Length: 310
Image 1 (cartoon, rainbow, N blue to C red):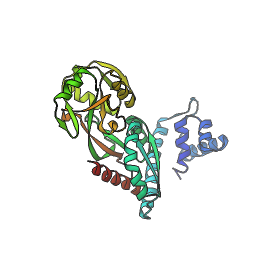
Image 2: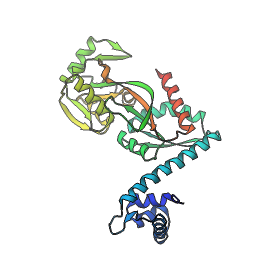
Image 3: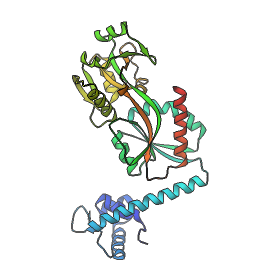
Image 4: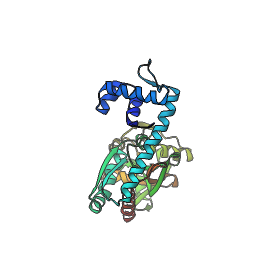
């Protein structure tokens, strides 16, 4: 069969070495070498440049690789659909979330989901949005919970909106400008409101480029033609909030993130007077994949839990 044991071929191609592939597959190198010879002989082509180190795919090999990946995806889709037809409410759900998002979201939504579906085992991958997108495209996770910046479009992914969320501005409570705002400001959704030009009065602690939060902040700053003094950039949202608590500057924080880093008396979380700092939280999955029933149950559960918090 032209696609028999395709995992062997994919592992050889991805590792670039028969030795490494044999270790990953728990087979002997000679048997893997014989497999590759038989495969190339049956196809009548050379899939690899055997003189190169690491092994590199030939043009035909790359074409074959692309087809094999599609066959693998179809195979996985069939298996997922058959499990759903059998009406199983158990199994494994592979979920991706941002580090900080998992810390504030999972304690709110996972207990109820686990109580309703104790047979579903949750496998968690935590990382940056770009890492989670790669994990989705490579089939390492079933769904990811991601914020959706205005400037990013996931063309190969389907996004189901879970809720809208405000991006707050965390400011040192004892800063003179913070104190002046608190004396006479309106309240919106339980938060004091600050103008975005608050950034003209204190430095900004910004998340690093490439993060979804940074995309959204940059979008808002450009729309308002603001160029704040950036004190430093950090890849850790908690670090930004902790620095704001020490009076070093202000930081943008999704509202869910503010729940786990309160710093009472040290940080004031302002709602920003701008619709550009409201973004969507979505459940994201590949367009070309079959979404398992357990994933749909999880999405429905999250929507129900989040709607109850509004």
